[in-house]
Image (cartoon, rainbow, N blue to C red; front, side, top):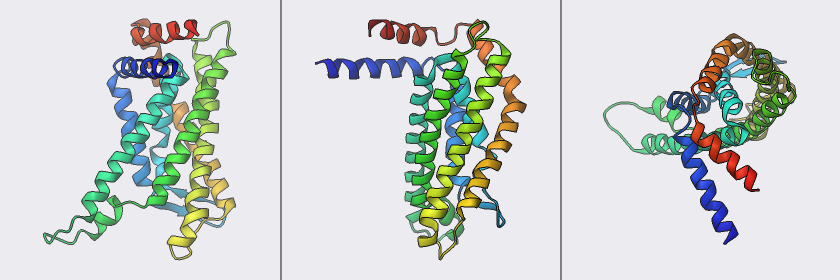
Length: 249
C-alpha cells in the first residue's frame, strides 16, 4: 500500500509539474535534445588531438533550460523533465526509423534514410551521456546555490550555479558520449573509424569551454526568466505541493 501510495503521489506531482513549467522552456528543451541526437551523427572536426561532433552547436541550450528549471523548481523537477525529454527523443527516433525503412519509388531517399534512420549506438550513447550529465548538472546547480545564504536569488549566485554546473555537466556529457560511440562502437561498425581517448577528452574539454561561453552569453536572459518567474509566482501550485510532500516525510 505504501509503494502504491508513493507511486500515485509521484504521478500527481509530475502532472502538476508539467502544467506549471512554462511551455516555451519545455519545448526548447525537448527540441534541443532531439537536435543533439541528430547532429551527433556528423563529425565537424577531427585532428590528432581533438574531434568535435555537431551536437556541440545546440547542447548549450539544453543545459541552459535545465539550469533555469533547477533554479526555480528544484533539481527533482529538472531531472523529471530531463527524463521526459529523453523519452520523447526515443519516440521521435523510433518514428524516424520507421519512416526510413518504408520503401518509396518516388525518389532516391538514401541520404534521408541514412540521416533519419539513425544509428542505434549513437542513440544509446547520447541517452546515457545526457541523463548522466543532467543528473550531475542539476545536483551541482542546486548544491552550489545552497552555499549562497545571504542572497541566494541574486545574479552572482545564479551565475556561479549555472557556470560551474554547466561546465562540469557539459564535459561529462561530451566525454561519456564520445567514449561510448567513437571509442566503443565506431571501430566495430564504422570500418575502423574511431577517436582516440585523447580526442574524446579534448572534445569534451573544448566543447565544455565553448558551451560555457554560450551559457555566459545567454545567462542574463536566463536570470531574467528566473526572476520573472519568481515575481509572478510561476509554478506556485507545484512548489507548494512539493514542499508539503517534503514536510510529510
